[in-house]
Amino acid sequence: MHPLRLDDLDRNIIARLVENGRESFAALGTRVGLSTAATKRRVDRLRAEGVIRRFTAEIEPTALGWTIEAFVELYCEGRVPPDGMRELALSIPEVSEAYTVTGEADGILLVRASDAAHFEKVLGVIRNHPGVSRTRSAVVLSHL
Amino acid sequence: MHPLRLDDLDRNIIARLVENGRESFAALGTRVGLSTAATKRRVDRLRAEGVIRRFTAEIEPTALGWTIEAFVELYCEGRVPPDGMRELALSIPEVSEAYTVTGEADGILLVRASDAAHFEKVLGVIRNHPGVSRTRSAVVLSHL
DNA sequence: CGTGAAACGCTTGCGGT
DNA sequence: ACCGCAAGCGTTTCACG
Image (cartoon, rainbow over all chains, first blue to last red; front, top):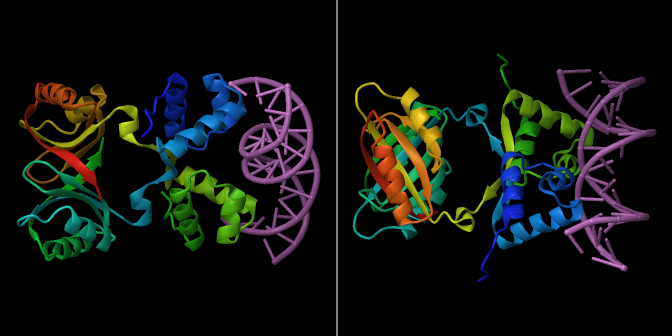
């Protein structure tokens, strides 16, 4: 695999693209001190290397009707993760992120639901999954 | 405040912009069945309404040298959150996300560090913060 | 990496539904 | 209020040095 060295130009480009993913190569180039073409080639390279995973729009979840967000810790019986957990995460659309972790729990899910009743239902589905012994939830009150 | 209703056109536009935040209004319009101009005006409106928070580049953290990622639960003395927690989250650059939550813990932080020693140091800073009585960490092993 | 030129996309005013 | 059209301008793309 490549050493993947990033210089200051790359880091500047990345920082600006995180702030504004639609900034033009022309404007970006002016800021970091490169021509438009050179800037585009850098960005193409960063994408090809996987440094930039993708460009995306950040959406306000409440605008789409997702008013509840919660971290759900997963405790599993025996040796279940991560194969069974991946299946669980993919089979439930309300799970928007999933991780295996060290510590007391075996996994952490980020769950989004439209309301409390919906969340309760999703939690039931998770609990009934084979291999899951119990869960521990923390509903998000605010983002800081 | 506005009712903020989104129609199918809006939802299609949003879905595509999440997948590719740099897709041109022309291509987007062809896909959803609108002219370039109408598409741009929709996106402008969604941004003005706050449905689209921003456009951003998703970066692979390991490419920037952040090899450790952990969820850190915060347990506080008395009534500390969320004012003190906001200050804590902003004062530590390794904290990339911060939430106040219901349940046993008062807050959850997402911390990124360059290695185990660095993470240990950051954890020490968090623990020494006034109002923080203890922490409980889960280091991320894999993303699913 | 930069330059130049052709292709393409963006932006805006306007008229229509 | 929303659409499409069209013109002018800015940006992207690529071959070349």
